[in-house]
Length: 188
Image 1 (cartoon, rainbow, N blue to C red):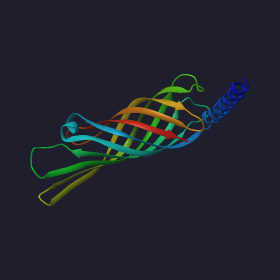
Image 2: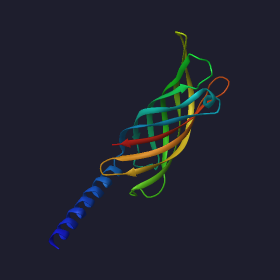
Image 3: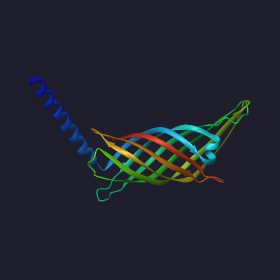
Image 4: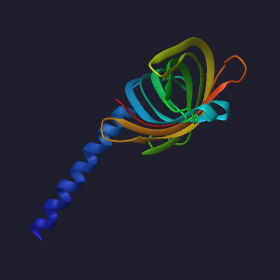
């Protein structure tokens, strides 16, 4: 009986500390973080590129008087060139992007899991590289683009984690470069 009571008190204390840390992190007006995940090319871009990866960093600011957060992001995306059937041809697509987003959370601020919508505008530095029989060629360009999507934030003890997906469209000549990253991240 004594052991059970001692364990119950310790478990209750741990929950109280976790809830206090969560309440403190919910009230913070700014957060830094990072994310990574898979990047799926779509449309014409999907015809030329394989599934890839992305990694990035973020800064998020939530004004006390507004329900919307503002998030700035920098990310690197990498996708391999699909097999074209030409022996010896290899290549990849890479992007470095700077994006500004509005994040609109839904539900109770103190909830441990909270859905949100996200969207914004950015600058994408796109580079395509290929190599064939020892000859390398590449082309790069800087384009504007936009994104929109949704995610879930998980409020944990002292930090937040999130999962999200977004549709990105980079305004390219001819056909837009569309892709959808599936992201896991953390914010402190």
